[in-house]
View 1 (cartoon, rainbow, N blue to C red):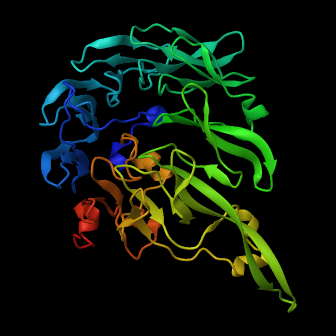
View 2 (view 1 turned 180 degrees about the horizontal axis):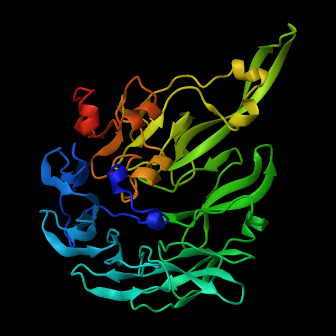
View 3 (view 1 turned 60 degrees about the vertical axis):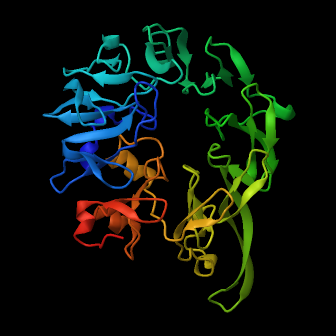
Length: 440
């Protein structure tokens, strides 16, 4: 949690994805959430806000697969849901478990070596210095290896035996999901299977080439569908979006005014819709002219590509735990820089809005929802948080900025954070905020 959870800059680039808290035996364990106290020590609460593990660690990650990485005396190890140390602190850095293993880095200079341990603390892949250790997904982890012939790193995949079954020959390699991974070399982008064979070639869909420089698919499947880009020309630009199945079949294509902004979660995918706003503008000379501006509104589509929640929000985030945070207010310009200093800037303004939480039908469930954290803030101060942390509900709680009359920047600087439940009540607020704000 907070700034004191941030690992040194050497390790920030390692992207760890996090799973809900699941016990080692496969049974669902009660979710625990990291907090901190006034002395900057990390502990854990349950979904009701009750302290389960009193704050005593220098830093700590979310729980994943029943364990959490914690720092004690400057060394990293792991604890269970009772706060018992299960893997003794002995590492320079430790990342949350994923796919049954956790990446750990040992002390040493100048290059810190890394390897992978299992839930007992035994090494599955011994400490080595050939590559940095990233999270395993579906039995593979992406590795970058130096290629002498071209003088730069190329990406491939390592398995849990320490072998590299899919050679490091790609400019980019994404994590596996639904048994497939997006890779690309200097010429094309394809989805490969676990043997390295091409399953989906992203060129030539519907007789058109996919965008290369202008648009890159996300490379991940969400609820069985992956986003792809199809090149066309229209008044909205050069990209058209669609979703494909793991077999490469196009499930649906979207009209050109819609842009995909997220994968499917809870049967909904976040999209952005562009439209034209017109305004009458009086110039300094007294002349009256009619001006147009492209603005963006956010909404959600279902798995057939139809609108499930109309595009009417000035900002919105992915669904999680059945709810999504959306921002009301005036639509945002597609390009803010084009507006700055122009006559239309004084006519079409970003009006005030409020963050609300809606369900998959678009009904407002929390009228005054927490304010999501920006991705910059998460990367800066919450590098060990699980996927979705600070961006919506995870296991019943939403870690967010506490709504107030302050700007988001002022609230972040004051560290006014808290965990909101699905009733819209904060079950925990940061010690910095407790000094200034009453508990909701």
